[in-house]
Each structure stands twice: as structure tokens, then as C-alpha cells.
Length: 350
Image (cartoon, helix red, strand yellow):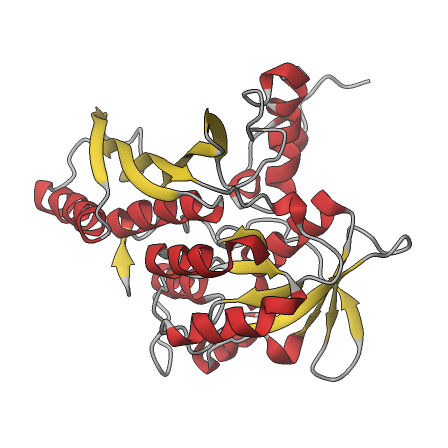
């Protein structure tokens, strides 16, 4: 037998795309090495849940919510934002998805030798402007430079810290819950892909990147008891989020394609390239699993807060035969399984 290494012996771009391959590599490289007693602080949430962040109990029913992420995007400036805005917004949103009110952040910036200082300054300025607008403290960080050619431009790693009165944990999604998306999907991924390939698109493709603090804190204050799951559909998009929820809970999630809001420009662009917009990243949207009794009221509040394209797109069902799956009812009326994304969806989007 040959001892030559195969493709499976090497890291691929697809391992970082947020789909099937990311799930597998995290499981084999990290989770397989952890004992059960290493996965979470007692009474909290950690790698046992693989949610948007972790939670540490601090007494009186409150939790410190912590989230960490690394951001690198090509190009670092894109329609609708840049790497700095993306890094700040993304980590703010991850804390919010756990039910936390973001209060502080730390960052580690790694820059390639030879980068223009003014370009780096603009990225950092955008990062800090988001924190200032959202009243979040930058309490520490790090700055490093890699030799020319050993790093492709910039990487920003952020740690977000917040306080939660009641946690939102995706595994609490229950049969009967309604699935709500706060707006049109696929825009960040489509904008980045168009910028990477220098595509000229009729109409404007623009990233949806934005912090969701006002939206989420308003929803938590009014309907916290009815929000059972929340996630910002970044890498892998809506398809990955729904498949993660179905896998965690063992429930069947059904969605109606006709109800999923997608901008005409995104739809036309993705159809041209043969890409599923449901697998493209969003950076300013939330997907919610909510109690059916309050679903319409929650949708009304989301729209009142300025998210006019928000929609109820599906629901959760108990099913012994199809549990753990996501089924899409197509515009034509047929049914198909909505698979989690696989392969290199769009390189370096977040």
C-alpha cells in the first residue's frame, strides 16, 4: 500500500467556509480532544453547544457572554463597508445572538509588512466608529506585523463581552416554532464575490454588514421569553444556520422558498453564476426561532424598527422520519432537501 499523502491529509479552503467541511474539521481537530468536563463552565454554555459564543454564570441568574472570531476578507474594502466594520459588527452580533448586551471588546490586528498606513488607519477607524456608535468599550488588544508574503493583507481577531439576563441557546428550538428572517439574504456574499471577480452588475450589490444591537435588544426586552433560537447567518448563509438548528435539535425544519426575501439584484447575479443565494453569507441579518403565539407580533416589531423585508419563512416540526433535516418548498410547489453548503462557497468573505 502507498504511504503517499492524499488530498484528505491537507487543509483546504473549504475547511474554513462554514459548511460541512468546517463542521468535520472542528470535530476531528478540536472536539475529539476535549473531555466532557472541559467543554463549559459549570452551569454555563461552551463547546458543548457550539453556539455563537459561550456563557459563564455570575449569579443572580445572569451570565457573562463571550464570543471570539477572526476576520479576513478579500478585498478588504467592499461596497457597503470594509474589514474594520465587518469585524466590529460581526462580534457585536455574535454576543447578541446569545441574548447578551455587548459592553466591551478586545482586538488583535495582524498586518502584512508593506501595507499602506493610511489603508490600515481607515480600517481601524471604521472598527472604532462602530464601537463608539454602539457604546462599546475597547478594553485591550494587540498589533503585529508579518513579513511581506507571509500574510495576505490583514487579519482582525476580536473578543466580544456582554451580559445576559436570559440566554438564547439554539438547541432550545421547539416543534411549532416559527422561523423569522430579519431581511433579505445573501447580500454580503454576493457583493464580495462580485468585487473579487470584478463583475459589473445591473443595480447595486452591496453588503448588508451592520451591528444588530438596537434590533436584538428591543426584541429581547419585549419578547425574550418567546425567542428560542437566534443566529446571524454568516458563513454558509441561511442554509447552514437552518441545518445547524435541525442537527442540534433533531427536529424537521420546513421553509417556503416564496417567503424568503432576496433582492432582485442578488437573485439575478446568483442565477447567472449558478450559486444558491441561501448559502451566501449575511452580515447584518438575524434568523430567529420564536414561539408561534408571538410570531406575528415579533415580525411587526422587527418591521417597525426599520427591517421592512422581514418575513416568517417556515416552521419547526417533530418528525421521527425526517428529524435533523431542512426541507424547502420550492416556488413551483415541489419539495427538496436543503443541504448544508459544501466546498469553497466564496473565499475570504468574513
